[in-house]
Image (cartoon, rainbow, N blue to C red; front, side, top):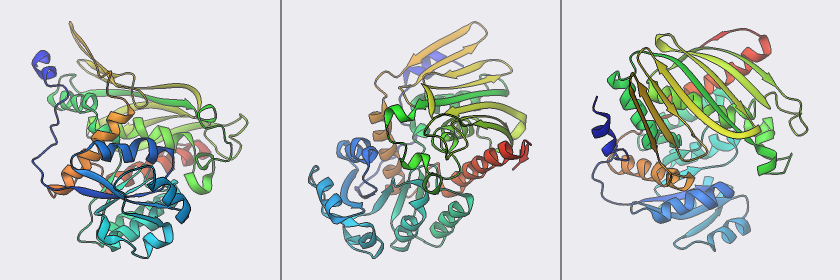
Length: 360
C-alpha cells in the first residue's frame, strides 16, 4: 500500500454525500456536555440547528435557551413526551443519564423523529432492547448511537488499513481508557456513580465502551466471549463494582483483546491492533486528539490530528448523523449495533462476579 498517497487525504469525509436541507434538533438533557459540545456543534454546522431544548423544569430550559440564538421552544420532559412543539424539530439528541434514555426514545419514535442517542444505549440490556423495539415500530425513525470515534479520521484510516490487509490478520488488541472522575467533577453523588442511573458500573459503562466499540468498528468483528476482574476501594466508589476494571474479550475470528478502564486513574487512552504482519497504534485516543502510528516491516509512519479535539469530534459526529438522515441512509451505530455493546458490558460484570468466562 502507498501510505504516502493514502494519508495525503487523511481527513477526508469518506462518508459524506451531497445533502440538501437542515436537521433541527431538540436537545434532551441540558448538562455541561450538551452546553459545551452538542449545541455548539450544531451552531457551527450548515446542516444542523438547535431549535428546542428539554430539561426537568421550565426555568432550567428557558435559562439554557437564553444563552443561545435560534431556540424556538424550551420544554419540560413531560411536555416533550406529551408532544409539545413537534413542529419545531426533526431529530432529538438524548444526553440524559443512561437509565432515562428509553422513555425519550419511545416518545421521539412515536412522533417520527430521528434520534442521536448518547452511549451506552441504556442502563441494562433489557431496556436497550426496548429502544430497538421502539425504533423498529416506527417507519420514520433513524437511530444512531453516538459513537463519536466512528467519525474520527484516524480511526477510519485504521479500519481502511485493516480491511486492506496492511497488518495481515489481526491477532491482538490492547485498549484502555481512564480519567480521575472525582477530580473532574468533585461530587460523589453524581449520576455516573449511581447504579440506578448509570447501570451496572461506572468505569466500564462510561469509559470501557470506547475501546470495546472502537475495536469492533476497526476490526469489523463482534465480541463472542469475555472474562473480567473488577475492583473498588476508594472513597466515592462504594456503590459501584468497577473503580478499576480489566477484561479480556474474544472477537470473531479469534482476535484476542485485553482492555481496561478506570474512573480513578491518570487520564489516558489508547488502542493498539497487532496483526501477523504489522501494527496500528491509536495514541492518544478517546479523550485527546488522536495520533496514529502505522508499522509494518521497515515502514513506520506517524500521523497526528492536533486540532481534532473534543469540539471537532462532536462537530463531525453531528454532521455525520445529519448527512445520513438527509440522504436517507442508516449510519453506523444502529440500535442493533449498540445492543451488542450492552450485552458485552453486562457480561463483563457477570464474569467478574462469577469469576468465569462468559460466552455471548
